[in-house]
Image (tube, rainbow, N blue to C red; front, top):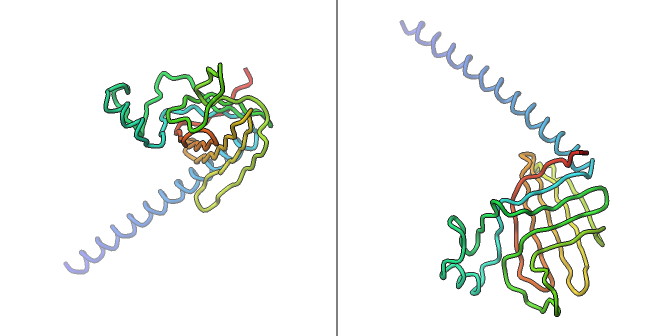
Length: 188
């Protein structure tokens, strides 16, 4: 009886080990294909990031707006739903086009007649770099843009899940972050 029990336990251990190894190898294959896809996406330099959420720096002004009930349901002073809000960060070769809504405080004046309240840019960044972080399986893309009197620094993290985070620092405004999805821009 004891010998039969040992045989059953040993058989269960062997089956579980095989299942775990099989799942692990398919997970490694899946991760490798995701990494290859991400490498190709970034190497082609024709991609677009669409933000789903904005994360402004929490300030007294934003807290006052939240307390007055001016944010959409599901949003608050430090997490704003961008559903239905057209926005993008596009990279096509060396050129970048950015149109992101801005929520936060302007620290320096935007100039007279400046109706541009969002973060908007179209052209070639003054500086840019792309680094692959092998430990974290993600790309770090950095860009700096100077326009008129304001300098914008973009720090973008792109993950194998095709999720992306965009952090924007400005010389004139409080910092803001965005999260969303990255996809290839089709040639249509």
